[in-house]
Image (tube, rainbow, N blue to C red; front, top):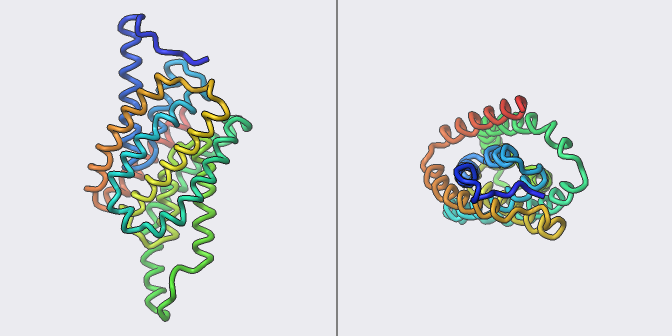
Amino acid sequence: MSATIDLTSGLSGWLELSAILAAGFGAGMINVVVGSGTLISFPVLLLFGYPPVVANVSNTLGLVPGSLSGTIGYRRELRANRHLARLLLPASTAGGIGGAALLFVLPSEAFELIVPALITLGIAMVLLGPLVQRSAARRAADRPASTGTPVWMNIVTFAGVFLLGVYGGYFGAAQGILIVGLLSLLTVETVQSLNGIKNLLVMAVNLIAAVTFLIIAPASVDWLVVALIAVGSALGGIVGARVGRRLSPSALRGIIASIGTVAIVYLLAT
């Protein structure tokens, strides 16, 4: 059973409600700009006494509207890269299903132990992305024009996004950082374009994981928590899209690296 909010208990109940709503807003905004909002909302739910599975399931459901509003905010970038979105969306969806199912099979420690290493890898990929892209552009300029992206590159990208979908459906912390990092190495798109694709893929994973949770473990859902995080994350997603799209590529990479580093410190300290 979840630690439901008791609004008849006076100030403490309303403070809990406000804190969860604010956590949803912060998570929604950071998810759109960077992609590690779960590290805000999930610990807040644990702090108020919600069991880990209830907190994870309810948090995932609540963050879907935030991902949706962020995706709409980046619709211009998505239209410009619809070919890449169509390639990767099925990979994220399939991975999300598998990851959500694993949540009820594997202990939570299975992913939590490697999350700091994964985030470190994601930050490194984001920062190294421009160097790899420039190197690839120089090599492409030195050889005859090709007919398109090599098949092996599409396969590697699809497989990588699928595995990140599994991770996202299971735990999801900093999934967005990992997606942007991976695509920075494997594509020639700008970081803003990749941020738009990242929002779409994260939304797909959260949505499919949420549906899977509802089918497998409907009793693990606290609907008041879901509603609070949903409202907060939707508003946060709108603000995040407005802020994120105005950032320069270097500033966006710097924010990703900074928030990712804070997330690593937090995870190692808890």
